[in-house]
Every structure is written in C-alpha cells, then in structure tokens.
Length: 150
Image 1 (cartoon, helix red, strand yellow):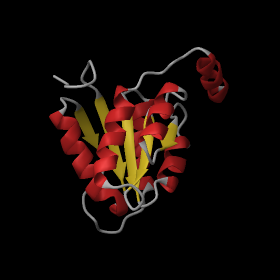
Image 2 (cartoon, rainbow, N blue to C red):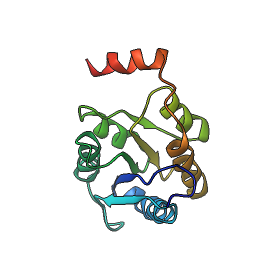
Image 3 (cartoon, rainbow, N blue to C red):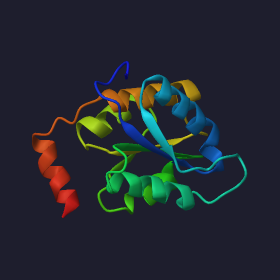
C-alpha cells in the first residue's frame, strides 16, 4: 500500500545511459512506496540513444498501460522533447520541487523528465514524490489542457 499517495500507481520509466543511476534509485523508491513500475530501459550505463527508451515509456502512458511516467537523461531536455512527440503525453522538465508541483497542479503533466547531470539524486527523489502527490487544480487550467489536445 502506498505510503503517501492514496492509490498504487503504475509508473513507466525510461532513460538513456546518462540517467540510468537516477532511474534505478527512483524505481526502488517507487516500489518502497507501494507503486508498480514498468522499466523500458536503459539497463546499464552503456551509451544508448534516449528515444529508444523514452518513446515506449511515453507510449505506455498515452495508451493508459501506465498511469504516469518518469524519464531521465543527462539534461532531461531531449527526453522531454521525445516524450512530448507522443499524442496524449504532457511531459514537463523538472529541476526543483516547485516545477514538479506546478507541472501537475497547472499542466496535469502525466510524464516528467529529469536530468541526472543537473539534479542531485536526493532532490530527484523529492521531485518525483512531490509530483506524484500533487493534484491537478482543473479550473482555468483544464481549458488550457484541452487547447493542447486539439
């Protein structure tokens, strides 16, 4: 049973070699909180191309096979761009607690991207928890989300 959010979530994970360490730590934390993960790789620090792993993670969220997704890379920028190519995905690049909370509260982000070379491991864990536990505020933000979907 999850310790912070109210229900167990299925969370897709995807990374390239530059985000591998953070992905593994986030996966362990999510399991400790009672969530399930679907790991799309990468599975080592050997050099790989991020779209090969980020795209399937984002597609799993878009197809509702997973509730949310977290993708990683060196900066997180390319990974956010790759995830946002998938219709139905709203991926936000997060680098602190405020960007993570606002990504959910205002943008209903269903995927976040984090750069391992930019964000410490401890802060990454806090970002993921804050984002998972935030709630979409709807209201004026819902109108804007609908505009993105058209």
